[in-house]
Length: 533
Image 1: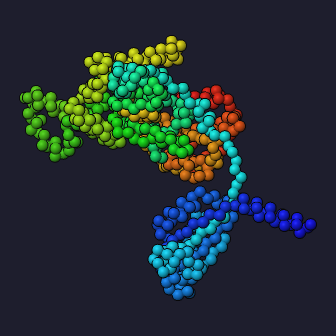
Image 2 (image 1 turned 90 degrees about the horizontal axis):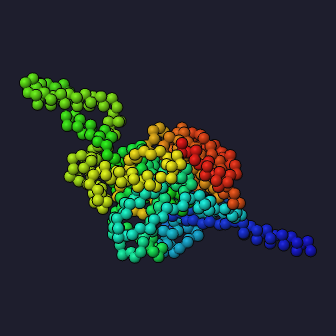
């Protein structure tokens, strides 16, 4: 009876081990008579090790092999060196091997009479036994985000008529007749607007492009469906106006796509963005273009060469005025040299606008706006920029009328970022946030799980960053400016309950640990509003 009991315990133990362990095998191949690790083999080995957690490893066994060329003793030494190469690389990665064996040519994997077979025999076999952890089923944080996202604004438009749409937060969308062709009945335009950091958090949005920080000037979501509910694609560009009270002159257009972790990544779209306003001197460019007429800074020899012009100016009023303008221009150049960065940024902005004006065959910014918005103005029966500005403002006020009556919004003339595009889905008007200072990685203590998320909200710019998933273990934020003031937002969705932690801090290598508190859906939305001040 005792023997049977011991046998049963042994069999149960063997079965438990079989269930709780995994054996992972990989071969590293070498060139003829070589034991150096090749680049492509290193990359394959890295990929094999990528998802293996060190703490779960029970054993690592390396066995070295060669082809049949050479003597037994030589091949045994060669296989030993190959094992040592792999062992050294494992040590560098903090993987500790438990047993190493060198078989030389004694255990071929293939036929040594063929070159293909020899190539397969020149190898080190890696066998890693890992402990299988019990599977834990967590809630999905995406279920919470689906409850938080804003309701889409919908409009049923006649595809055969010019249409001007005014969204709730002031976005204007101009759609020409024939933009959606061969459609019977109305086309439904669905849209979302995201201008505030709180809305970015609620929509699970962030402002990064391939890992680089962006500063947002506004995001919109657009989709179009026909009377059957099927998506339709615009055949003409739509004119879109995003309201702004704070011009940034280096804005670009981006489209958004989510990665497997549902992190939004923005990639550039080939579209021109111009601030739309009716002001005469566009952000200093008119003065800059006027100053450029006098050429570069006039030094000592340049001034000597202009003596004749100075004498001519005594009796010639035209020359006298030209000399005065030249001196004023040179004075501005000398003054601007004290702020080289500002001068460089101004020249870059204004020179790009000047090239754009050349391509449209115009000589000033107002004519450029007229050219770029001609189709829209023609469809509305308008002839001047001021008429277009008034029409846009009228549409905006209609959308904001209720808020204005309730005292929630002030009536003010807004300017716009304007662009034309056929792009649907998420669109972002952004610029790269070239924040000064040293860039570091900020690592949290939170394990990556399906019921969690965290965001980094920058205090001084309109930027929200999602964590990087390259670590595979804990959430971290890569390549961000050290000591920048931020709020670290941790979110957990467990047992259909919401847990929130918001920490005010500065960018540092080790992020502070979360202090979770249970909140309701409404309390969560209210907590995010603090980032809009």
